[in-house]
Length: 75
Image (cartoon, rainbow, N blue to C red):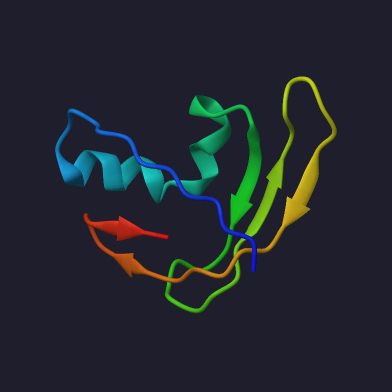
């Protein structure tokens, strides 16, 4: 299984970060790399993700939501 992992410190309240991360409809407004993300926000569900790098070809994939703990973890 392929895995993408990253970490960043964000100077904001967890509730605000959570609100942005779970607002799939508005991802393209703050991350133009992600053109679409949709799916049920619960553990075990498959998300439908379309990405398009500025200097490359777009692609789609369907990751499984492994953990979804409100205001804490989304992976």
